[in-house]
Amino acid sequence: MTKSSDKELLRASFKLEYPYERSPGPVIGKFFDELSNEVLVGTKNSKGEVFVPAAEFDPKDSEHLSEFVEVKNEGVVQSYTWIEKPRAHHLIQESFAFALICMNGTNSAMLHMIANCKEDELEIGKRVKVVWNQEKTQTIRDIKYFEIIDD
Amino acid sequence: MTEEKKDFFVSDISLSYQYTAGNATTRFLNKVAEGKLVAQKCPKCSAVYVPPRGSCPRCGIATEEELELPDTGAVESFTIVHIPIPGNPIVPPYVSAMIRLDGADISFLHLIQEIDLAEIRIGMRVQAVWKDKSEWGTTLENIKWFKPTGEDDVDPLVFKFKE
Image 1 (cartoon, rainbow over the protein chains, first blue to last red):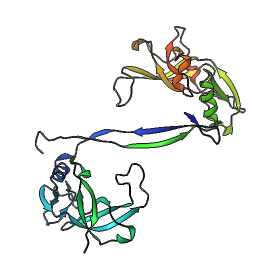
Image 2 (cartoon, one colour):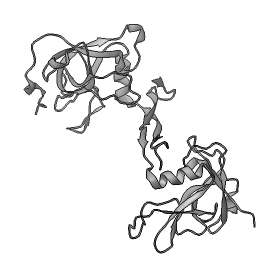
Image 3 (tube, rainbow over the protein chains, first blue to last red):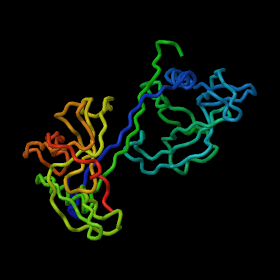
């Protein structure tokens, strides 16, 4: 511990960690695998609705979903939160947005980041597209971020 | 998913933070750095707290009187740990114990070593094993662990919080 200059109180930096192993399962596993091929897949229910990221069960009626469909790597901003000053743990160190993005042709939204834009350029309904990470890890990080499509 | 694909990935959750010890703990740890275990006593109910937190949780008043306790005590409760915890340098099996110092009314968590695991029991008398003085700092890690003294056990009823 070190003494803080102002009050002679002891201080120390701590790090609380909980590393654990997680199984993605057959559906999200397939979604991650395809990300490393720069392909986005969703699952389709019997009504023809598509969920991206691929869902194992229909969020409304719990129907078991196993039919995979490929979707285009473009979507629409459903909502967002602007991060003006990223913290050390954020993957992007310049101002960016966390956003719920509805991929074209789907009935769901995916949480990811939108970068390479200014705050006043971003709005709900804006069209965005995937920017892929060069290095693939078969995780959601294979999508580096989304960026606005210039119309 | 086919057999050769990876089934698991490591998910890391971590929280970095700054801990400020506060007045009572700072005083306690500065004394620990000198090899002393200094408790605080409640002016109302006379309960002795080590490590002290600056107040008596029962009476809700500040504790200012300080008194040095010996580095001997007894096992109030214990667990034998057999399962390794990732990132923990201590090799199982080892004993984590709540240790009640002589003269204290609460116990604190520390290790017990230099013991046959079959011998560990509530009421067993123990004494601190300190690191070399050159390694002392403002941490309870100055005490490497506690070891049995071989004295007669104490009656577990002494652990009852005095009214």
